[in-house]
Length: 359
Image (cartoon, rainbow, N blue to C red; front, side, top):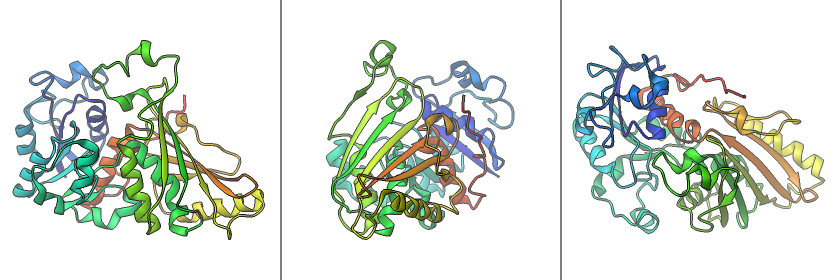
């Protein structure tokens, strides 16, 4: 068994990490910290954890929020759920002390491409050498590399939904790599816990809007993944939307089929669904749905699943993909634990056998 630490435990992703780690069979101890609530008890902030984050599992502090340095000292694996640009110093310490770190911000999502990170996040790397130790944490693409990694950059939530939707088609070469359109909708937890004009009820309730059109920070990460999958450059239009629900992402993706796949819509749809089912048949958390079913966020809520359905449309000339996941689980904390399982040789599904709460 190992000891886990969560730095930034009072944000939505951090609190979700604690919730999931509490049920993990290989975790003996959870240390938690938060700058905003240092010295307070986590269960006073998240009452759903009342009488759960106590005793030996949460260690001697029994859920009391310590300093980040205390968390690193008390843990074997550290999860950083922090603003962008903060995790590097903890990763540097983890490398020096033989520990492992999984970061849920963007600090390690661009592998060794500091210029791209600087372009989109307006920051430079303070510890450039440690990025050689990092691996991008999408198991369905980089499982082998994750197994031996010491630092993992957990993917963005929109990125996971879009990449898993496109991955089989890009790998098979059945779509053109220009003019791919990704239209994604996210619940309000994706905007974070700190109150802003974006996530106030009166601003987002009973409303539905696009935002960061053409300039969302997840776009270069999506392009990076698609380029790697296709083996060549991809041209992508990505539009995120905020919808008045707490959790979930639904992405509808459109891509032109290559001539060899373009046929009657019915035949192409059947062939494409067979392609997707075969590609994901051994993946524990990707479900390609039965022919008559369409993905819905409620059917993955609270779980680590990504549900996908594909269609040939426009007289069989276009591929349409619908992909859904819970942005707090497969889009963040659940995927982080999936990466931890791979890094330590645990069963990949350990602690993540969560049945979706459909209503």
